[in-house]
Every structure is written in C-alpha cells, then in structure tokens.
Image 1 (tube, each protein chain N blue to C red):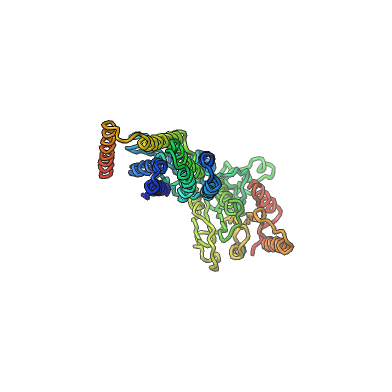
Image 2 (image 1 turned 135 degrees about the horizontal axis):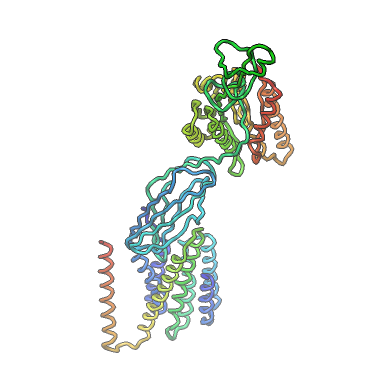
Length: 423
Length: 163
C-alpha cells in the first residue's frame, strides 16, 4: 500500500508558520488571524493521516463469454472505520469495457460492506486474466491517499461470434468414416447413384425391379455413401494489417471459428494449423470438445514478427491427413505463407485460399509516390492470386463487412466449373 | 470559484488600502497569475505560493493602516483558505472519475466544517487581541481551558497513532 500526502498540507503549514512569524515580527494580530485557519487545516490534515483499513475483493460470474456479451463483475469493498472516498479503477484490456463508469468514486460507511456490480462488455474476442481493481482511499478533504491493488485474478475467455453459414465447401474426396457428406464414390447409402448388373453377394432389397423387368436381367441400385471429411483450417499468422483496432487477423479468427463450428456440427473432423511466427497445430478430430479446443487455440493465436524461414515440412505429418480439404485464411502478406500454400497444392492437397483482404485497412498516402507504391502493392497481390489460379487453387477475396457466405459461394462456383488439377 | 474568491479578497484588500493600492494590486495580480498557472498546469504543490502574494498584499495594507485592528481579518483568512481548497477540489475534479453524490456531499460538508472552524479560530484570535487586557478571572479560565484542551487533543492523537 502506498501512502501519499497532498503537497498542500505542507503548504498550509508553511503559510501558517509564515503568518505567525510575520505577525510576531510586525506586531499585527491580523497576520496571526490569517495564519489560524491554515494552521487548523494543517492540524486537521495531520489528524486524517490514519490508514483506513479498506479491504477489497472481486469476482466474475463466468469464465466464458461470447463477443458482445456482458459479464457481471462484482467488487466487494469493506472498511471497519469507513472511508470518505474510495476511487475504484478496474484495469481492463482494450478488448473489454464497462457499462458503468470506470473509474468511479464511492463512499464507505463504517462496518458495512459494499458491493459494486460492474457489467463488463466483451467487445472483442480473446483470452484475458482480469486483475483486481486499483483502489485509492482518500479522506474527505483529500489530504491523504492510500493506493493499493486488490489481489486475485479472474480468467475470462471471450469467444468470437459465429457467423451463420448457409452452405459449406465440400471437399473433393471424403474419408472412410460415416458422416453427413455425400461421397462421390458408390456404395451403401441413401442417395441414389446408378444401377448396375446384379453380382453375387448383392442384397435382394437392392434390386431395382423396374430396371430388371425392362432388361430381362437382375439389376441393382447403387448409392452414394454418407461419409465425413477432414478439414484443416490453415491460419496465416505471419503478418496482418490493422486499422482502428480491427485487422485482418480478427476477421481470420472469426471466419475460422465459424467454419470450425459449422463443419464440426456436420460430424466432420476439423484440424487447425496456425502458421506464423509461432507455429501451433491441432490434429483433426470431431465433436464439441474439438470445437472448444480449436476456439481456445484461436484465442491464443497472435501475430508474432519472425524472420525465420518456415515451410510445411515443420508440421507433423498427421496434421495434414490425405484427402483433407485445406482451407487457408490468409491476408497474402507474407511470402513464406504464400510459398507454403503453393507447396501444399503441389503435394496434392485440396486447397482453397480465402484471402482476408487487407485492402480496406490500408489508406493510400496523399503524395504521388505513396499512390504509386499503393498501386504497385495492389498489382503484386494480383500477380500472387494469378499464381494460385494457375496452380488450380481457388482464391477468393473476403472483405470486412461482407458475409463469409459470399466467398464460400464463389469457391463453390469455381469448383463447379473447374476440375481438380493433379500436380 | 477559486478565482472568484481570490478576486473578491483582492478587491476587498485593495479597497481598504490607501496610498499603496498600486503595490497591493501588483502583488495581488502576481498571485492571481500564479493561481491561474496552478489551475492550468494542475500544480497543486504551488498552491501555497499562489495565495502567499495575496496574503502579503493584505499584510501591506494593514501595516500601512497603523491604527486599529482590522476586524474583518478572519473573513480574509477564510477567503484565502477557501480559495486554496476550491482550487484543490477543481484539480481533483479534472480526473475523469465518476464520483457518487455521497462522496461530493462528504467533501462539501468537510470543506464547510473546515471553513467554519477556521473562521472561529481566526475570530477567536482577533477577539482575544481586541479584548481589553487584565479582565480577570474569565480570561484566565478560558486560557486554562484552552491549555487543557490542547493537551487533551495531543494525548488523544498520540493514543490513536499508537493504536
């Protein structure tokens, strides 16, 4: 606890001393009368210098919240002797704010604990550790101040809000496990695929009697089996562009959460690769637990500046299973991630690049040189996109404010008319 | 408010000064500039230096007036104290801290009590000075009571400090 004394207390004592001495020297009682209130104030100030004995605690009503939610935080204050003024400041990261004023000043009655309910608004996703409030206890005339911070730490995970997706991108090839994705191959399933001649071992219930009667032989129906798919969300965390507190990384995390949520609900297996200054990954798995794993992992991701050369070889082989759909969310700002994606395509992965566009976050400069460099930068991005398209990789630009459905539909349209290229 | 109180005290001081009014106004004006600097720069540690010129100007005016004791001195003294306290309150209010009504009320009450107590103390000083000397038992009793009171306050303060 830090104790501070107002400098005016010493000033009052000084004024009183000067008044008394001058009055004595000049023999004028008026100067002594001038000094008297200041001497009294100094005495009162000195008498206030007792530690107030304020105790504080705080508690949060939840550990998890969604972006835009409000969590209830309660600050408990108590003092046996009471306090004329307690300034309470709740230190919050930029991503959180309070509905009630912060800081605020309250008075404490002796022996009566006081609870300060505070609504914490979760403005942006992230994993936070809320520290105790900073307190400054002052006397009624603010001659003395005692400052300390309440102990304790409350974790709060704010998950990104999930965007509603009407349709998902189907991968070219499905896995062997049962799921909700109609496979392109033929086998046991619900969706009709074709008819073929009966073969020993075929079940009687699969015979297509109408086709058999028409052709004079036994013909059986074939179906598309329902299988699951492996989806790997590839998050480029080498670089980002930010403006007004929002950036491409925010959009990428929000998109990854929405995609993971939707694919996992469809019983697919979803994995995550965070490819950047810090490399992290999650092996593909399905279920609600995997969704929490992915979102928790996304909350930890951050843009970390790194000059280390990295390629996909640093990833464990099981991170990228064969036939997996690799959905890359990248601002296409770093050559290393661009090269890694081309490498993945060369290895035969079903790759889709969703370009989280940094263009809305960049303001071209006013002078000629700045405008020229801006145009060159835009052109270089076009060139990079063309490289991907030549390799058969659909690249769609996704901008701030546009629903994620739009780029996904663009990719679906691209894939309807473009077959897979075997590298 | 602080500047208004300062201006009122300065105006009163100038009004009761005879020949030296220019000197009083000059010194008081310097103090006013210092007070404005204190308020603008939020320099609470210079607050005493801002009212000292006004106190000096008042001192000049009463020294120049060689005759009777100025019985309005307690009001001037309280005015100076009020000016300081209002300036300090103004500096505190600059922090964007949403204070609840009880906090503001407590400070206003404490300030009012301090000002009244200061007025009483100052008036007592002037009253003792203007009272005729040698009036016997009543003043002796008052002096003894004041001494006992001072000792009592000292003992209470030391006990509270040790607790």
